[in-house]
Structures are given as C-alpha cells and as structure tokens.
Image (cartoon, rainbow, N blue to C red; front, side):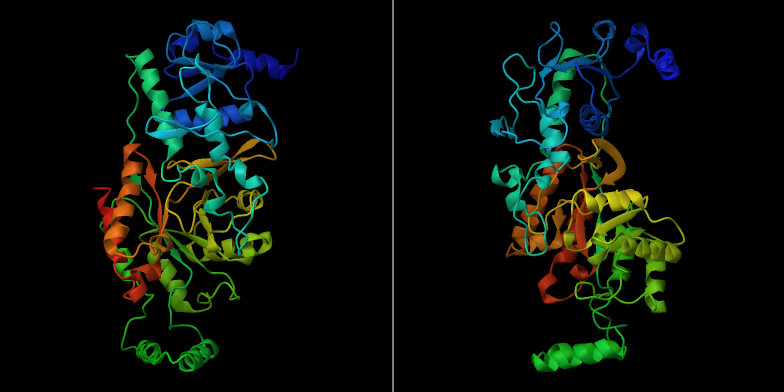
Amino acid sequence: MRLEFVIFNFLRPTATEYSKLKMLLVYSHKITSRLQYTFKHICKRILGLEVKFTSKVEDFIAHSSLKMSYTKQPLSNELFVRSHTLLFEQGLSDLDINVQPWETTKGFFAAGERSDLAFDIFAASFYLLSRYEEYLPHVKDDYGRFTAKNSLAYKQHFLNQPVVDIWAYKLQKILQERFPDFKFPQRHYKLQPVIDVPMAYYFRKKGLLRTIGGTLADIGRFKFRQLYQRYLVLMGFKRDPYDTFKWIITKQKQCQFKFMVLFLIGDYSTYDKNISTNKKEFVSLIKSVADYCNVGIKASYFALEDLSILKKEKLKMESIINTELAAVRHSFSKLNLPKSYRHLIELEINQEFTMGYIDKLGFRAGTCTPFQFYDLDYEVETPLQINPYHCLDFGLLKYQSQLDKKEHLQKLMDQIKAVNGTFTPVFHNYAFSNLERWKGYKSLFNLILESAE
C-alpha cells in the first residue's frame, strides 16, 4: 500500500467528523480542479462558507450540516444542482450557450426541472471567471485587446450585473431555506480605488529634447495657450496640471482603506512616455506616495510580451519602495491570456488590476469579488489574484453631462452594494486636474469615496 494513500486515509475526516464541521459538503461523481476552483469562489469568497468535497455516498449521507449534490441525478431528496459537463472537461470545447432570463438577472446552462437551481451557476461562473471566451477565436481591436462587444455578457445584456455574485446569493437563499439554523457570515461592501499614473507630469521633468519638441509642437499646432501654460509651469509659477498627488494623498488620509497607486517606470517609447526614474524628484514622488498608499507598477507596453523587461521594471520599483512588488496593471488595459498572467506568476507578483473594459462600465469576469486566475491550459488554480475593475475614467467620457456620469456611476455602485461586493474603479492622476476634458472628475471620485461611508 502506498504511503500517500495511508496518510490520506488517516487524515481524511470520518463520516462523524464531517457532520461536526460547519461547512458545506458537496457530493459529486468526479472531483476536478475546475469544480473545486469554482465552488471555492462562490461559497468561500462570496458567501464566506467553507466547502469540502466528497465522492463517497456514505460520507455525504452521514453529514448532518449543509450539503448538496452536484451531479447528473440526485441521490435522494437532498439539495441538488444538476451539473453541466463543463467542470468535468479539460481544455476548450465548442459550447452551446443559451442565455435566458432568470428573475431579475440572466442565466445559462439550464439545469432542468429536478434541479433546485434553474441553471448550473457553477459551470456558468467558471465560464466567466476563467475567461473561457477570451481563449476562443475573436476579433481584437487595434491594440490587440479583447473588447466588450466580443463578450457574451455584452451581447446578452448582462455586462452591467455581477451575475456570479447574484447567482451565489441565490444559492445562499436555497441553503438557508433547507438549513434554517445555519448562520451565514455577513460580508460588507468594500472599496478598492486604483490610481493609474502613466505620466506623473505633463510639462515638468521631461528633459531638454522633449521640452523643445513639445514647444515646437505647440507652435506648429497653434496651441499658444498651452505653450504659455507650459512655460508658467517650467518657471515655477504654476503647478503642473498632472501633478495631483497632494490632492490624492489628502483624500487617502481621509479614508480607512488604501488606494492602489500604479506608476509607469518603464523606458521611454512610442507607447510609454513617463518621467525617467533617473530624475530624483520622480523617485521622491513615488516614495512619498508609498508612505500613504499601496504602490505597484503600471507595466510598460513592451513588458506585456517580454518577461525580462517586466522583471527589470519590478526590480526597479522594489529598489525605490524597499519592499516586494505586490501589484501590476498593464498598459492600455491589454492582456494576452494566459501569457500575461503566467509572467506575473513567474515573477511572484500576486495582485493584478487589468481585468476590465476601457470603454464600458461593468463586469468583464461577471464578478465584483477578487478571484484567482485559473490556467485553462494547465487546469490549475494559480496564486495570482485578479482584481477586476468595473469603471475606468475613460469609460465615463462618453456620457455628455456630469449628471449622466453620476447617474451611471451610481447605478454601478448600487449593483455592487446589492451583493456586498468590492468596487474597483480606475482613475488616472490627470483625471483630477483642472483640464477641461476632466472637469467634474474630482467630484465623481468623491462620490465613490462617500459610498464606503
């Protein structure tokens, strides 16, 4: 008899011990990585409920606390959700997805009449969380990005809802009805603001050649007002329009939760034009922000494809903040799945903030709860935590009036509050400037901060 088998059976809870544990026991005919991953997100991360799995009927029957079966046929009269095949497969397949109305939301992978839930919320959640559709053939935009219009959520009109979290609470309701004595832990609405800094200063610290180039460009385009402002800033008579960091730090001091500030520190290129870290004032700025906020990097455009460049930027930031780098967001909100995420895992970076759409408010992965990246090629849950963002400041520009912006932002926050989720908005440092394009964005950010009170 193999040693591993002996140890497993020695440590595995007996039927009596299962009953004493305050957790959900799930019976399934086959326990896969996909099944464990999805149940853990729905049960543990959203509902705060410990979950264990068994394929032994006797253990399941003996368990007297919360339990459900997830298979093709119920064992008896237990809580039963009829399973779709997705969580028992490997790799990608051609899925037939029929999205249907389900009370105030939508659902897919219908489960049939005998199931206690009308849809297999676990298979549907896995489809959204794993970003299954982003591995399938699709048309990319000019920057090579997966766009909202390609997504099932946009096409079927549920992008504006955190459906995975909504489905989780439907499961909780049924569990509560079946097990009325069980008290579910209460989770609360959280706020996780992200400040993206692709360019710390608009005019300052650019170096002589870039300043001369900017001056000639202003003259060539007849932007004399900008030229005048440029030299007021350069001579110290006026604050740089992108230098909003005092305001950001002031706001941070008023909050109990931490902002995540992500600086671009990559080399100058066609796509990335921030200040060089050879400038002592830029390094001092990063250090001063790190005294109050969490700090990470906005990975440069070329770091997305080149692991060596990403590693160089990671080490550079770690030398500035004197601590291990925890968080990354990619330039232009671009992701190449699964390569982008595998690079982060290889460099032991465990927080990621690129999962969202630049032009649409909503839920790219169907959830407002941070989740782990599941590698579909290797069929394994990874240590990388994905923090999906639900609103990018550019996504609000399409609404003409300040009232429209506030209305859509409030609707988004209401959806997240309804499921006690985590709201992750992304604002750039220049969105808090006095430039005409960003007029009113300070008040929008204040509205977001007030939602946590």
